[in-house]
Image 1 (cartoon, rainbow, N blue to C red):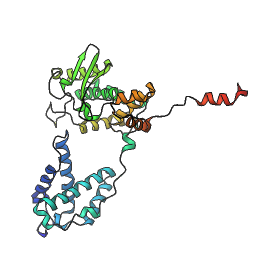
Image 2 (cartoon, rainbow, N blue to C red):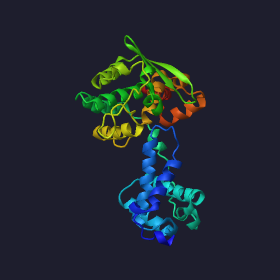
Image 3 (tube, helix red, strand yellow):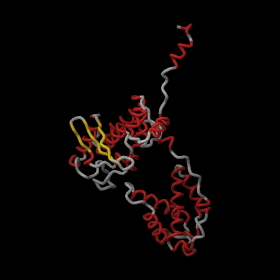
Image 4 (tube, one colour):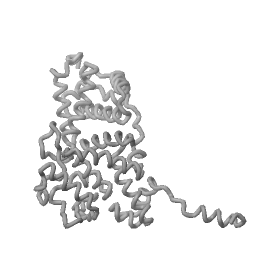
Amino acid sequence: MTGLAKIDLADSAVKAAVAVWAEATTSTGLARQADIRREKQRSVEAFFNLVKVGPGEVTPQDVQTWLREMAKRGLKPTTVYARACHLSSFFQWAMRETALGQTLRGNPVRYAMPKAPKPYQSRSTKSLTDEQVVKLLKVVRDRAAEADPVGKRDYALLLMFFATGLRRQEVLSLKGKDIEIEDDTMYVRTKVKGGDYQRREIADPPVRDALLEYLRTARRVSILKKDGPLWTRHDRAGKPGLPLVAWSFVENLKKYAVEAGIGDIHLHQTRHTFARMVSEMSGSLSETQDALGHRNQTTTRVYVQRIAIKRDRHSRRILERLSPDEK
C-alpha cells in the first residue's frame, strides 16, 4: 500500500476504515458502548498519526516505537496492553473484512505484542478498612453538602454500594421504578447475575435519605415509579437526563479516594468491603453467601478468603493454658 505511505490520517481512507472497525467490533447493548467505541478508535488513530504510514507499510518496529512512546508518557501497562490489543484487532479485521487485507502481509502487532500485565485482581479484590471507608464517605459527603447534584448523586451511590454489596451494573442500571420507599425502609429491585430479579430491602435510612436528597436537588423525584434511569449525568458534555455510565462515576471515585488519602481504588472494592464486614459481623459463611447473592457457597468461601483477616480468638487462652505458673 505504497500510495498511503506518509499518510495524513485526517485526509485518508484509513480513518474511515478505523471508524468502521470500531463500530463493527464493539458489542451493542453495552452501557458504555459509545465510550468504548470512541476509545478504540482513538487508540488506533493515535498509532497511525504517530507512524505516518499506511497499514500495508507498518512494521513490528513501528509498533514497538508506539509502545515505547506510550510508556514514556506514563501510561499504565494495562492501558498500553489494551491499546496494543485494539491495534491488533484492527489488523485482524482489515485482513478479513476489507480491501485493505489484500495489501497486508500479516498482522505486525503479533511480533511486537507486549506481555499481558497481571490482572488488577489484587487491587479490585482488596477490601477497604473501616477507617478508609469513613474517610472516603466524609470526602463525598462534604462534596454533597455543597448543593451540587453530582456530589449528592455520588454520595447516594457510594452509600448504596457499601450498604448492599451489589455489583457495579446492578446499581448503575437501576431505573426509577426499581425503587420503592415505605417509611424508613427502601426496597430495590435489581437484575442480578444470571438474569434473575431480586427485591432487596435496605433498612438503613441514610441510604434512602441520600437518594431522595439527590433526586430533590436534581429535580428528578418524579422519576420514582417510572422507567427512566435512576442515576443520570449532570455534566456539560452530556445531555441532562442521560444515564450515568460507570466510567464517569469511577473517575469521580478515584478523585475522592486521592483526597481521602486512600490512593488507587477500584469500584469492586465496595463489594469486597461489604463481604468483609458481613463475614466479620456474622461469623457465618452461609449468611455472607446470602448477603452477596452467591448461588454456590464455594464462590463465597473463595471470595471471603481473599479479603478476610482471620481474627485471633484463641491464642491468649492457649498461652494461658500452657503457662499455668504465670497465673
